[in-house]
Structure formats: structure tokens, C-alpha cells
Image (cartoon, rainbow, N blue to C red; front, side):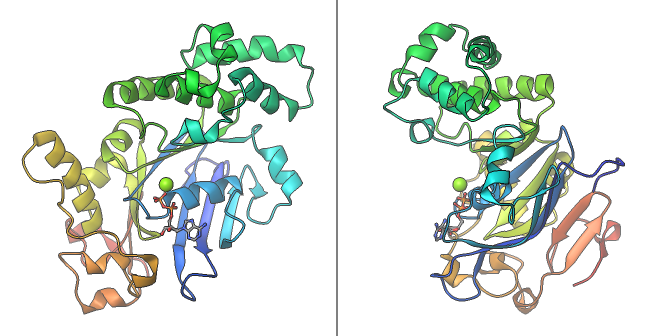
Amino acid sequence: MSHAAEPPLVEVQDLTVRFPRLAEDLAVVDGVSFSLTAGETLGLVGESGSGKTLIGRALLGHLPSTAIAGGEVRVAGVDVLRAPPRELAALHGRVTAAVFQDALVALNPSRTIQGHFDDVWAATGRPKDELRALARETLEMVALPDAPRVLACYPHELSGGMRQRALIALALLRRPAFLVADEPTTALDRLVEDELLTTLERLRTELGLTMLLISHDFDVIRRMCARVAVLYGGQLCEIGPTATVMAARLHPYTDGLVDAVSSLAERRRPLASIRGTVPAPSAFPPGCRFQTRCPRATDACGSVRPHLASDGRDAWCHHPLAAAGERSAVGG
Ligand SMILES: Nc1ncnc2c1ncn2[C@@H]1O[C@H](COP(=O)(O)OP(=O)(O)O)[C@@H](O)[C@H]1O
Ligand SMILES: [Mg+2]
């Protein structure tokens, strides 16, 4: 919840995404709500298949054409789920931008980096001579200093880390306010990932970026995000300040995810601290979708999930872990 008088830059209210060819009434994103104030980075974490990318795409107004979306998404006042394509196109690049996991997929293999910059610039309708200095400045910003050489390259001629930096430069060329970064460092090895995260941290400060950072890795979230939303099977498990969520976990799924990270760091327990794998969406149970893997599950979990709220924190669980005294149920 925003404490400022200004409305949040991004507001997601009860977002639901369905695919008609899946079992009827099955939402792969199920009633998700959150908001981002200007300048904030929110982490979105969960295992593969939990709906992170769909949420990221919904925020950009870029859901697959077969998806049916409900609820409301507002970015800088624009109702992106209902806005006409023209209005979305005007928003994209100027206000919103995206960086995805795999730059090789995102970039056109038969076009140089210069060609990609030309395409982004063409959408602005501004004179082309303005682009040169801006492209160089933006490449320097993402720590790609040798602009003429980088611009002349085809995507495959750059290293994975450089490609990802070029992709970020393209996204930031028009100085958008809001960036969706979907697993931006997942394809990179640890050292390159670390350097890129450092760059993202600097860019965020320099440009005052608001960011949704999507990752399956709690280590990345802990480093980059003051607040985190934990997603399982398309449902939010909990959301709140990252330090509090990690230290005093409420939802058993959060507990398992955080344990997986700390056991990796300590090399103590095996990574599989959550038993089993995410079931196919058609096998999701009613109520809490994590119940099939949850050590605390009871019959109650098959019913509507209770919403627990305490200052700045929300969780949805019948059997939360942390001290009960600080929580209050706010409806079921
Ligand atoms: N175009 C689509 N058609 C049908 N199902 C889809 C489509 N895109 C995604 N899904 C399903 O939605 C769920 C969430 O996908 P996704 O958002 O990509 O997860 P994540 O990014 O967390 O790995 C998955 O079960 C996936 O199979
Ligand atoms: Mg994804």
C-alpha cells in the first residue's frame, strides 16, 4: 500500500489469466493483486510454471492472443488490459519496457545492434541524428563503452553478458519509468550475473527506475528487491518486505523456497526442501494450490484461502508458520 499521496505507478487488482483450451475455469494466474510505487523494485519469485512471465506480460499489455485476462492492471493511469493497441504502443518504450532471459531470442539474428536501435528509434518519430549520441550514452550506461564496435555487431557476435547489456540498453533507450525484467540474468554464469546485477542496481538509481524483477532465485531477489511477492501455481502466497518475508516466513511455500537457497549456500541439506514438483495446471486442487506438496496441509486447505494481513505484509494460508500474535485475519 502506498503511503504517498500520489497513486502507485503500477496497480494490479485481482489479475486472472485463463487459456480456453485448458480445463474450464482454470486460471493459470489466479486473482493476483499488488502495486508498485515510483522508484520501487518489487521481486516476483516462484518455481518455473508459476505464472511469473504471464504476470510480467500482462503488465506490459502483451499477453498471448489466446489468453483471457480478468481484473485490472493500471500503469501510469493506463488500463492496459483494455487499452487499444495504439495506446499500448504509445506506452511501450516511453513509459514501459521489458528485458527477458534470453537475448538471443529477443534479438533479431539477421540485424546488427545498430539496426535494433534504429527500429526502437523509428517508433519515436524523432529525427535520426538525435539517436547517435543517445545510443552511445545508453551503451555507456550499461557498461558497453566501445559503442561503434558493439553497434556493428550481430547478436551472435557478442558474449552472453554483452548481449544482455545491449538488450537492456535498447529497453532503456527512451528512458522509460517502468521496467519488467524477466529472469534477466538466469542464462548467465554467476560471475557475469553478479556484474550485470551491479549494473542494474546503478541504473535503477541513476534513472529512478521502477522495476518488477522476476526470478526463481531468492538470492537475486534478496539482493535487488526491498519487497517480494511469492507466487505458486498462479496464486500469491505472500507479499511483503523481503527481509521480513525471509526472516519470518508465513507461507510454507516461502519457507521451502528460502530454505532451498540457504541450503545451497551452506551446502547442508539437499536442494529439494520442497517435495515433489509443480503439478500441471489441470491437476491444481481447489483452494490452496500448494496443498499437494505442503507439509502443513489439512482438509481446510481445499477451501477458500484466508487472507492474513499485518503491517505491510499479506499472506494467504490456513496454517502459517510465524508467530500468530502479530497477525489478524482480514476476511476469508
Ligand atoms: N500460451 C499459452 N497457452 C497455454 N498455457 C500457457 C501459455 N503460456 C503459459 N501457459 C501456462 O501458464 C503457466 C504459467 O506460465 P509462465 O507464466 O510462463 O510461468 P513462469 O514464468 O513462472 O515459469 C504454465 O503452466 C504454462 O504452461
Ligand atoms: Mg518465465
